[in-house]
Figure 1 (cartoon, helix red, strand yellow):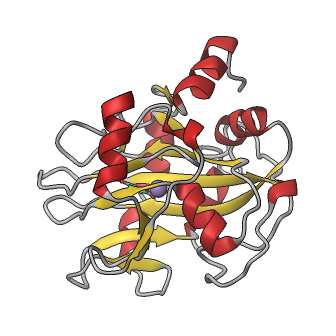
Figure 2 (cartoon, protein in one colour; figure 1 turned 180 degrees about the horizontal axis):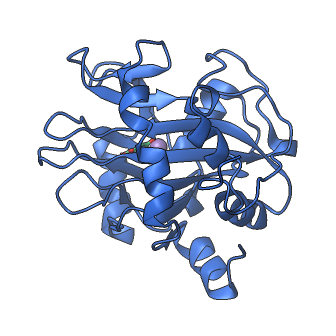
Length: 259
Ligand code: SIN
Ligand code: MN
């Protein structure tokens, strides 16, 4: 799958791009069928909210779920990333975020590349996220919020917030977010299950807690150009991967094929 010139220009200008209904209901079901099992696993990769019960995120699920292994090699996700990053990519991080009904907690304002640079020694922001909505993302269930075009301003200063949620994060302060939002505005891309959202590693983003009765499962692939691989190995391998082999895609029907 290739992005057209208009889509490439939009990503370059805004730092994000929504591709609606890219995966079928059958493909989403193949993935969602395994989600309850994954979130029930008591293993270190499955991080829980502060209550110690509600699933927050399942890191590296490609290593313990066959449908998610296939998704990590899916051409509909990997080819547009290769196109934007202009070359071969490896899988830097893979996670399924739960944002559970009623109990899913906030993701504070941050930039992913800020973390990849500080914690993982990634040399440059030649890396990005491509996310697949496994459930509808609505106004109510904690959609991602972006400051459009904020990827143009490099890495902002950040503080390491270990207190707000169960997962430590390098977060931007209110003054920085206010100034950026005043200048550039804010968007919250919504879409049905099967839609795909790409965003630049430097894009400022966050998401509110989910007080609705609807969960908001999203799976994220963070892909990095192979030349830009991380140099620092302080975080666990299941958070910041150390296999820099270029991804080789499976066939387009891999999620629904029986073999
Ligand atoms: C993230 O920014 O890494 C996750 C945000 C979310 O899933 O809401
Ligand atoms: Mn993020």
